[in-house]
Length: 509
Image (cartoon, rainbow, N blue to C red):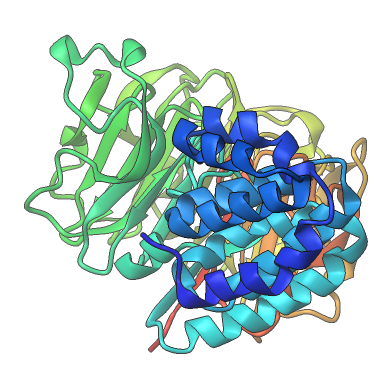
């Protein structure tokens, strides 16, 4: 795609500042290596007598290139040690950004490169996004780890502030889930797609899953869903398999893990034992799964060593089995947590009670009985809280009430906002730093969390090694919330996390 008129104007506006030094010339060999400039371009540059004229030719040649090469060049210039060049490169990119929605998502690396001016740049970006998105039916923002293109087609490995993902926005996703190095999303037409490091989108000989990794830089359909309408997709942020629910209540699984069919399969297949059960919700950890039917029945399968499946034998179950402890109760939501064989499960019943069972270490069950158990027990302290959503990480649980209050228990670590790494919370505790905030939705990754409030604001907390906090900085924030300033002019109502990447979006009514 050629440069837009506004992008060319941005170059012309700041070229005088950028030609006063030779930083651009220092990058010429690298520009050739990256196929931004050709050898013929270099010959024309070398014909000029002084450095200023040579730099002018570099930018003249840049105007003739496509947009991808323009932004790649500017990123290289910002990485130089020349503060003046880096400063004006950042300003030039801000001016260019205002013209083009497709380029908007590429702004993040340039903005984060200068921490001193980051706050102002992010606010400016937010205003730009607000103008861009007025005409869009859906705006999807993504940030964090992008080393395997799990955020889409953007070229950068880390995005430290949210970027508009034009590709995902066009699909108007109704569900997004992030894995370790990949992402899944369901379009408004019920089609399921994958991005990033995939081993499971294309059938392979003998279903040999372990030797067929492929990087998907653009959304690719997941095989097995050609004639069905998908409504939800689930993938654990540290797992190697995924699940999806269709409009007729069938549960599909694929990948390498507890698929419920005694197979490892690169193509999605329905879980045979659940055919005809009308699944409405499901969850998975690294080694166990759970599914809820429209009649309130709960089925679990996978590793059950410490009672995480809710079955008396505490053994591994390859196929789904009904949890008999809920024969007099109706389950409406389930969440699976744990790591390796130390599984635990949390469920909400239709009467508003929250139940836990499985491995008890580090307060994961929210009750101080000191024993792992297969028997579900209600958390009495949450009986009057009207809990509507639960989500589990490796050793902790977050629960959201209908009033927008967030509760936490288990190993404090980085997923308990307001606590520090070594804190263990044995009982459900209302997170105090949310006292003045009404939470609408939340999600947790491997080392970070995100919420959107009922008035559409987005906040993050946790580790920030890949830019998961979306604030443009590198510092972690384990004990306080970080407002995502770049999204301050939006009212977003959906969030999702992968291992170290994040999505936030909103579908217009």
